Image (cartoon, rainbow, N blue to C red):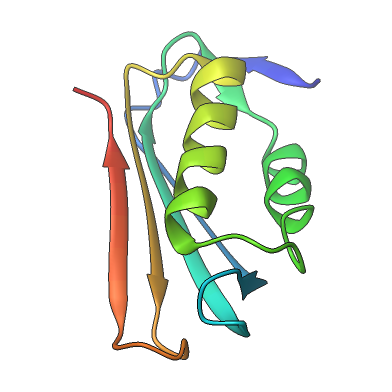
Length: 105
């Protein structure tokens, strides 16, 4: 895993990715528009590795809450941010548009 020391004093990083996921409840594909907002600690993530991890979820069966939880856990475990907010929006699911968030306390 590539890790870059935060020598520059970066105070906020926002990352975005869209993936297609199969909703195990609605029995249909939807687009999860993922956003990650983090305050890095000593490490800045490798954006390619983060994107690859998120794209690995594409095509899998899960609900949007699972998407948020899996991405949150990955970022938190691998990059130890000071604060973290992972958000997913789905506007093309079988249900009304929703946004789901998980944030560090």
